[in-house]
Length: 183
Image 1 (cartoon, one colour):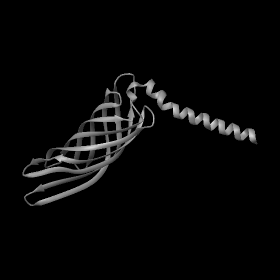
Image 2 (cartoon, helix red, strand yellow):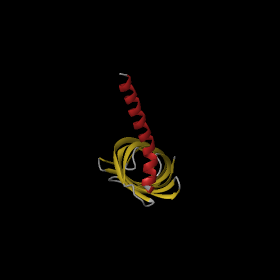
Image 3 (cartoon, one colour):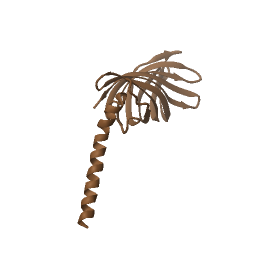
Image 4 (cartoon, one colour):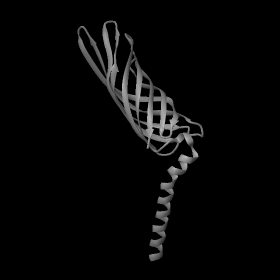
């Protein structure tokens, strides 16, 4: 019984040591994989389109995430509108948005890491006109593609296209640029 306990403890210690060393090994093996934990800031150029309007607005957002492996990550984002657009006498804007996403990354030896992203977003939009203000919030499946480019150790730039919302003849697309810091 004592040998079985020692074997189990030794096996768990070996497994724990291997798992702890895996991120460091992955970091050396895949240059563009960057670090495990990350946080970043983005500016997103949103296009809000429905039957009656086509507005271009802007938003600032923050993100935090973790790369579980060099190929798979999860992240959360939240942001708020900073630029609105007037179409037909009505000011359109993004009040706020947030979501949770999974990323599939093409880690490689170059400084660029292409990825696909999928998750859910909740957006709150506002339309203000001469007859008053109307707000609407809803959520939808979101998906997109992007690329992270290493600019310095632990710092990367980001360019991303994402379809945030597509329901009832309303589409919301975003082109985002930003910076990510890896820890």
